Image (cartoon, rainbow, N blue to C red; front, side, top):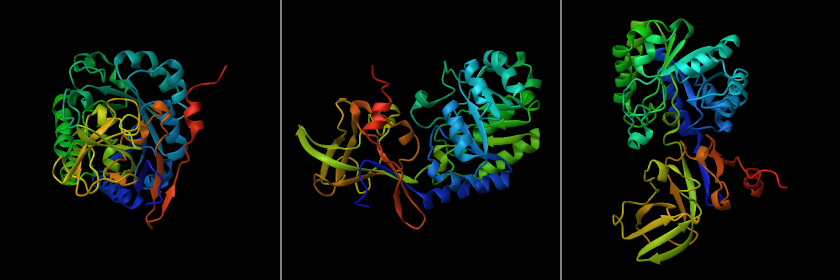
Length: 377
């Protein structure tokens, strides 16, 4: 492992399979569909493994939809808060399930999807807040949210033109959130549930998190299906890959300015932006809270962004230049959001297979940075 160049995200296939077994059990016992949300995790190298456990992928736009169609190869569902006509026409080449955000978008573009023989979905805002990360920033039902048609307008819609009712209200939610959403929708939207053939309860179901009550979810889905005679779809992202991989980083320099500082080749700004956006504090193997161990450091990235700070940690021993640090649980909403600010190289992607062998999947270079900046004069 010391030979693995840094920074690199390393996925463990055995741990991924363990999470997928949970998804497979839910699919089997609740007779529902489970899709991979590629906005949270998209690593084609493990799509063959995931394909055996899931029904397909769900996308947030044209490129993700194409990735799902070409690399995963099963059902592709797509939702966006807004489309252009050109985008909808292109999406019909990759996706057979297209969800619209509002009655207005449905009226403008629904006929295009129908003409292409796609299933039509409408996202509604169910008014159920259970996002456990980031408060209103990650709550699709926060006041003023742009996600989903509001309940007051649902009676104006021609439901004979809609196949799937879509609700997404969760973020890293345990079973109480998943079950609560299902019950809330059942009790508040029954007249519309009786008009559709399927209900998509979105993502945010933290299925692979220790302590998630899988039995409670299966029971809730089963009761819902029995009552409304509809299919049920879930589209987790993080829940399928929680605790399946890490980000490996190296200490580049030690510094002091009133407090001890360590500068890493991994950056919050470029490699782990959710540290700043969520915000949250990732765990590091062998490290603790400030002052828990003898030596406390604030860790920062090498960019010129003042706020490029990964957090404050304590260690049993003094840090050394060249020392490897491993940030845990770094597979969801991580490498899919990396960027090249300051010309910072993209973090590598690697896979540890189930035999324990590590393979680098990427060889990012200057060309990847340069390609994003457009052609020259």
